[in-house]
Amino acid sequence: MNFILAALMLFSGLSDGDKFQAQRDYMIQTQIEARGVADTLVLNAMRKVPRHLFLPQTAQRYAYEDSPYNIGFGQTISQPYIVALMTELLRPKRKDKVLDIGTGSGYQAAILAEIVDSVYTIEIICPLLERADTLLKSLGYKNIVTRCGDGYDGWPEAAPFDGIVVAAAPEKVPQPLLDQLKDGGRLVIPVGEAFQYLEVYTRKGDKIIREQNIAVRFVPMTGKAEDEQ
Image 1 (cartoon, rainbow, N blue to C red):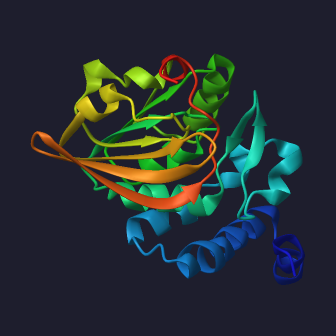
Image 2 (cartoon, rainbow, N blue to C red):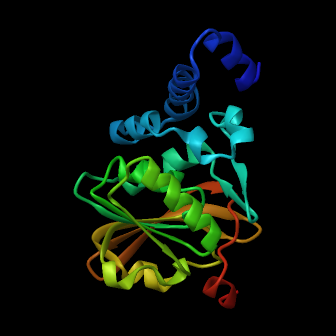
């Protein structure tokens, strides 16, 4: 039984708002917690943020399936499990300042903003950034700062960051992002071309510790990252 059919059976008779909340709760239980994400801050943020509003209106009924979705300009909103996993790998804390590379729909920025003190988010496709910025402001987020630009360079004047999360895959990790990590800060990024893996880089003084996580599939990082290929 697919998610939509199950949702129709479970949530019939509810108002639209209640249906979406019920679908989010069901998503958390069956797609996120069931696959090992346990951080309470992450789960609460996923439960609160209305993912359907970050999709085109015609696609909102698919918002709580565990799959990515096309948001235009060749870009996608990541599947909920991947957003949850990347956020948990970041190990966010309430007082953190986080850099989000690849704003896209704005969903990852919203999840982070529910947890940390401030989010700086960069998108290289300006019309996407404008759309996300309008939505995030309409939802009342005051701790998100947006910029249209190349995420390869990070955000030097706001650095250093407690965490950096990247939603596009370069062939190798941009050095500016590593340079902009605080001591103890973590960078979560998909890396690779034909084969990609989610990787975590942690700064320990002058050293960078690398950990490899699961295989993933993200859109390629464009801009300066393409010059490194």
